Length: 211
Image (cartoon, rainbow, N blue to C red):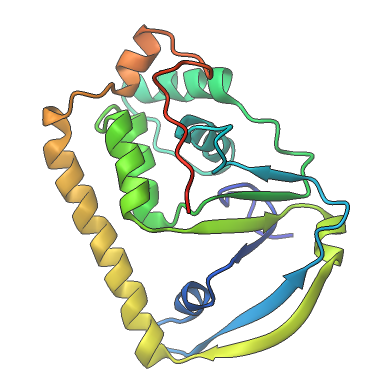
């Protein structure tokens, strides 16, 4: 059960950052909680989208299968089909996936790229600037069964909700700046990538490892 339109589909979504988990657990009206677990990785299959084996278009292909994009206009529907065809990732049979966190603010960057309003370099830079960290998603019952609960931490709304709002405001500010600079960028847009028929092994695609 759960929301099938999360980044990597149905799964148990975690982060290695306790502070970030506390932010996500709060609202302006209530304190929150962050539950801490330990995962026994024995016998589990992993897919790390932030490793050097993948580029940001692989990550975007997975998002396109699960998140809802506004595919309006002439380019976005073609871009979606192109990325799914050229950069699809076999992830459905993996127990655990590690990858970028695409919260709602930074999801806007992926949407802008798909609609040809942001270049590839700007998309990559935006993800790095966001300091999003990694999310770890348990997709199988086997992985979920190997979790061990450790403790629960209270997240004070007076401390963590302002941090959550500040992070969101920073993301939106960066987004507005990136769109203003889009016309000055020399790196390719999705329209160029499609016209030149880039493939997953293209040397022009950088493999950025998120740390």
